[in-house]
Image (tube, rainbow, N blue to C red; front, side, top):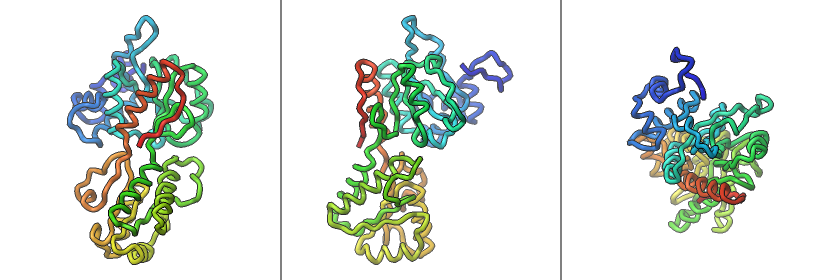
Length: 330
């Protein structure tokens, strides 16, 4: 257990009160954020979670390991490099609620990045009975070998592995939104991605390729001409040309919020009225809570609540049997 050295007492554990002081919120807010309760914003919940994980906060229950060597805790394992272990507040909330139903609680575990050298991690000393591993990009083999060697059940979250993983059906989501738009008589449907190379770029998240291919296949099935753009190369002239070709109701589906925001800014610079002259849709873990932006572009949330429930279900199967198949959630 990490000791609260910065509080001046090297012998005391990190408490919710210390997490609250560090995060600049009340202790009640910390409790609500970590337990998935209360009416607090997703931004605040994510902030508290990030601080708790950085401080390596552990609930007091973890010290009460049972005599049969079970701890009642499932670890949420992420890298100290937070850019590859981002987790949405919706997923976190649903995961904790689902765990409570089976009398388990969530313990936050941070491990060093594999790029820092050999991973010196002993799962047996983490005080957990299993792990949900949340590492979305990069080389995961070192950490995969660590858990498998220890014989500890692990489920990989939002990583498209062959075994022991749950992840959103990004291909199906992109395909379904195109099919729905076509059914509503929209035929001028374009796609904006961060990259449009034929295969998934090395080290990138699987969703980059899956959302793109879902769009392309659905357009082909509907016998429509695909119109694709890379946000890094898209110009105002490209946008005007697309609107002319995509009449009468042009729509751009964007890989994520960053691409949607780029299109929105480019459209404003070009004098294009949003959403009257161009509709913009984007994928994201949850909507961006900004009244001004929300009135202009629409979010297609990735089903993080369903991923949490699927992860709990798979963990139960894996613990009681040897269930190994991956599962996509749409």
